[in-house]
Image (cartoon, rainbow, N blue to C red; front, side):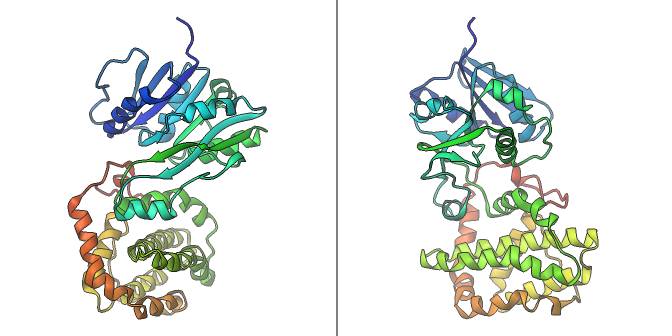
Amino acid sequence: MPSPRLSLCTYTYNDAEFVHDLLAQVPSWQVQPDEIVVVDDGSKTPFVPLAPLPQLRVVRLDPNQGITRAKGTGLSAARGAVILSMDCDTRIAPDWLTVNLPNLDRPGVALVGGSLRHASGADLVSRYLIAYGDNHNLHHAGEVEFIPGNAFLLRRSTWEEAGGFSEYAETNCQDHYLSNLLRARGFTLYSDAAAQAWQLRRISRSTLLRRVWKWCHNAVKGQMLGDDRCVPYLFEVAVKPMLERFGTSIETGEPLFLYVDLLYMAHSVLDCLDFGVQQGLTTDAVRCGFLRLLSRLFDGYPRLWAVFRADLAAAGSPVLMPATGDEDAWLDFFLFSDLLRNSGLFDWLEREGVDQLRLEDRKGQYHFSSYAIHGAMNGAKVDA
């Protein structure tokens, strides 16, 4: 049997419906894979294709190993000279391979991708990700510094020469690792916006918090400053980006985006403070002071505060109100609170926004995500 030229690798963990849909899309592609490798990363119900496909192999890991190990296993198991790696919740246009295969033949190019956008739905989190999420290389054709891991092409020889993920143990940001590794070895990364891909998975607010924070928490904590520099540092990394988005959210008629930003600010600061207390960079009194002023931000808005606390708890950051705390340390940090309250935002959220959030939760139209069961960065376990 001749060796396959093109292998498709995809990965599943308790979300087989995405793989079934992906496999159903493959016949519409202008270029067909000679081999399909599905890595089942310890799903509760082992993955079985809906219909037998002669070119399909299932590689099962048991127990669950995490996406880094799953991707590494799939890419190493692929026998094709060229490998297309796709997350199971990603879809590509029929001509994606037609556009991108020639790009892999460009001199020095080792990794190829295309434009990536969110197209997951009309719910709040999906709209937020469309506006502010990881939409990459949307209008670029040429050399780039990063290729997202949702869909990419590389040669099997390049993967083997680079050593795969053998030196990388984190359970996220494998695409950053691979991009940096190949660039450090002198290779070029190429992205062509004409090759379009989109992400379909719909996730909850608490899952969004965990997912985005998991991507960047190590870098933020690694630069944390101690003592009286801690709070100003947290303002720079958590409040400034939030304030920069406020105007855009209002202009685009999306006041609930401000609620999401407030949630993410509180979640990230609480996790940083937990880390800071453990490392001796700050004190528990400072952490308690943050909680007290955070709750004061919602004075007069009991429904909003209840939903906000519930979302934080679901993300692994339960708010247990302390009797005392160093509130003075946070006075400058929370200067933005007057702006929010005087703008009428909290009045609207209390009157209408809370009902919209609860309606979305009752509909429950979210897809399974591993971020919904693996909790906060401090090691807490959170139920889906």
